[in-house]
Length: 201
Ligand SMILES: [Fe+2]
Ligand SMILES: [Fe+2]
Image (cartoon, rainbow, N blue to C red; front, side, top):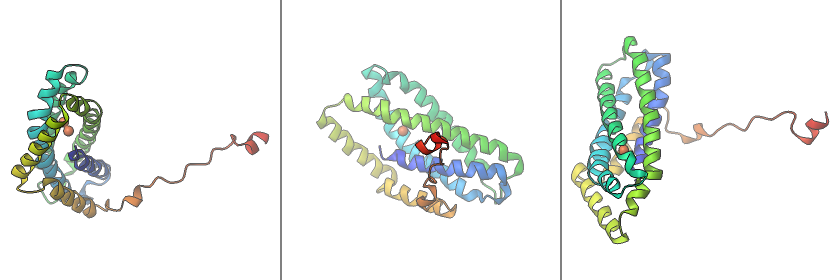
């Protein structure tokens, strides 16, 4: 499910923006948030969730029973709550500047949305999708793969994924988040008192 990679990058934009919204909301250009929410809606909610997960994957997993089946209902509740939050983000980012009154509420909505979707996608990746694959033979899996490609073409009139990568890359660029090297963790702190030398002292 390569779509999750796009959604994760949108969540990273939300996390970075939430900090700035709380610190200095007037310094934020709402346009980048607006574009991210619209991408999440078109690519995540209206395609990945509605056309693939809710139409094919969750019903098959529910029918298959077991641990994964118990996830389907709560994941749908989370899709619906996510849609409400996305619409909220789109509505409060219409103007040229973010209002200070909205700032705290918006920051909180972004942070809780990120937390929900990090949990959501991680469970889908490790429990729900593997269980779904188990419900099919190799041949059926190939067939459904082709069907999903047709749905993607129908929804976006071409390669929706490639276009989504371009969109999220442009958003990251506008926010100074494009260079991945900035996220390389600094060297580990020195631990005092545990080396042989330290112990001798
Ligand atoms: Fe989902
Ligand atoms: Fe998903």
